[in-house]
Image (cartoon, rainbow, N blue to C red):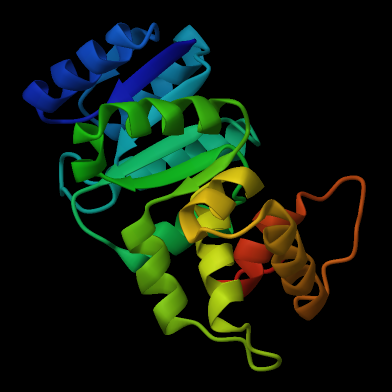
Length: 214
């Protein structure tokens, strides 16, 4: 796997490169601003970009805007965004642009090396990974105007948003996989997500509950 890193902190940039290398992932470019990120993706055609939200010159949302520009040029290009804090607007902007092959993690998760590398691989393979703290904050603020999910269904949906498989959800909640499947079926039913060959219902369920249903 080949990755481009966009992070203005040289120390963190080098640290990310080392962590990825230890995981067998090659960093083909490491840059410190949004325009350089867009250029690096064009030049190197990597499998994934790891992007800090706040970069020069204003240190507000340059990284996110560069990521969205890349996605507009290359629909579905895998982007893993890192943020210092839970910033709801940035998370929802990114998810609203399409939540396949996309991730939003707090920087503190980088210290959990195995989890971070797993997130990198899942996003690169087309999955969606959302930081648990982001999920909790967003789910806590958004509620459907009809047929609210049960507490257990909300827990299952939060773990789905983190990119967890049914078996991982079952292990986390200490229930059977069959029980998880029943909860997910109920979630799809309440969110009116019928089976469709071109839709990823797990991603659509998360988007629907967060208020970004297509």
